[in-house]
Image (cartoon, rainbow, N blue to C red; front, side, top):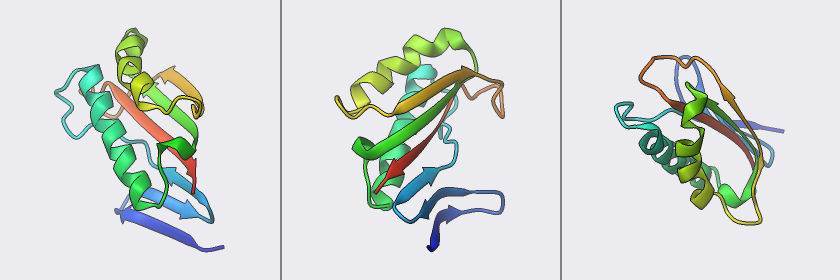
Length: 115
């Protein structure tokens, strides 16, 4: 089976497609000055774009991993996640607190989706 990579950089690819499975890298906000809700909204928009480019969409997400810099931001993140994720097509999900790459990042999300 072939492997296709999108948005390839020197350290990572933002999207990797293997067969009918699409993997995203951990995605952070383009504007890390936004609050947790704003960062989450930015990330979910990028996920939508990456999945569309890979020939799929959020209704086909199988698994999501969410990292929060502080678990106190759980409700703020979910205030964007809950209306975004399709009803009846919610993925398996893990959400953990973790130190992120820079202190400005409040949220990082990666997904695995079917095509």
